[in-house]
Length: 386
Image (cartoon, rainbow, N blue to C red; front, side):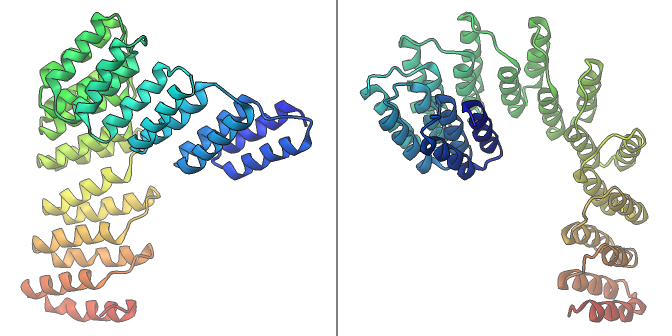
């Protein structure tokens, strides 16, 4: 075994999240006295520990490596600072940053970006802004990540005008925004219902040669769906397709949901049917959303049929899915049709609970459909529910 073979094993185990195995390989290297772990091996282990949220272990490993190898490489410290920031432990992130400085190492812009993210993660915008400005007056040059990180925090806080000012400042400083930056801007504008401005930034992306991805289009579609603007939601979908961007299952979830919210259940059925015919992969959410809408719109047989299609597609129907349909039908005085879901439930190994039976019994009595009660009682005895 040479250093390359050991390194492949360590890196592979770390990618799989098998950190203990990676450490075992590292120990074997050390005890062999023939091959010593490299910096890349240590980096792989530190990344693996931080990815799993094992920051106590990562910090111990860092200190151990630093004392044994006398390393002055700030990259090791950057990984752990970033790990602390990602879990919102800004206190330990700052303390480790201070340790970097005391040790005579120079923090990089990557170190600073991680700390900035940490302040944003805990929602301390005042500290984040102070730190952002401190980076600007330091010898380090802010990057696209620096600006985008702070803009995202401003977007989440609803500080859209400040976010836009920061974007303009970024461009004036010669830092090119990427698709992630535009995604942050468009998301913030959509939250404030500033759709005209959001589309302007989408157009600006094309002018600047930045390709809009599925996330950006889905963000716009979601914004119009939340505003219940069906026409614009489908317009963005059509534009997405024309630009050669393939819609995702999330795209269709949003479109089917907004049609159902607007009461356009027939159009939602047609859309789902068309997508199924084209072999486009859908998520369970698209089916359950439409089933609930069909029940609410007093279309029980369509809901029953679509439930069968959902099961045939291999999705797992839960007691919550069936309860949602049964409750809606019973509220709209369709208890006989609601009972038809019971054999479907049993066929997939889902047993009605007490609440389902009580809802059905109450609905049958209100509708004076008493002849169905013995059947329901027999089913409840068979399934062991009182």
